[in-house]
Image (cartoon, rainbow, N blue to C red; front, side, top):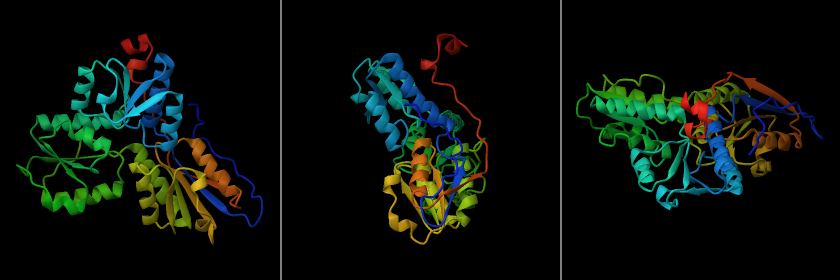
Length: 333
């Protein structure tokens, strides 16, 4: 699946009517972890041939999953659904040790596409568990990343979904408490929960480094910057994508007149554009640029021909492929 990178979209001339404006957030779309995970499935298909199994959606984007399925990827919910000895890719969201053990027991040939930033949180969880801390994990119940992190130290980790849950938290020693976070949350939402936790547990420790993914933060900052100028913000992303859902919330909180989450340009309701002169466009961290282009072109056909890119950060981080897919020399280094 070869997709265009996040390059600047040229200004498109409106076909008719008064010129209107599109503000295009930058950065947007694919982050380094998603790019690595999607390429891992593509490379596995090239190297081993179809089918290659993938536990859960490799990333939370409908278009990406459907495109990889068309190439021969088979998406399953659990490792138990994979034939013994077959290749299976673990998604970018990570897995628990129990899943790894199950895969090992079935002699599956695993390819670990876990985002390195998620792996970092797993390592933090294991470290604090070894030091016998109570770990308060800020995140959403049922999300694959939360399930994977919690599985690293289930006897030490408690999930805290929001500030409203803080009163339910109990710890063994209020002097040995630390918080960690799901990487794809809203920064503001996370810190609101952390502040409430710190009111209850004044000696609550911070993680050794920021757990919120750099890409999540950057996309939220870009949306906050452009939202006050927007009558409408369209976020391209799937409904099971936590970071995409958060972008809608961030846009509304930062002053956008309205904001909607869409997978494709065809989902734009014409009534949303009535009386609108400025539309902001962004996309979640698992969204290929081709879908954003489709939205911008759809808007241009409806008079929104002027495109201004709102650039708030430069992203240069690149992650190497999982070691199972690297050339032999690179893997040996």
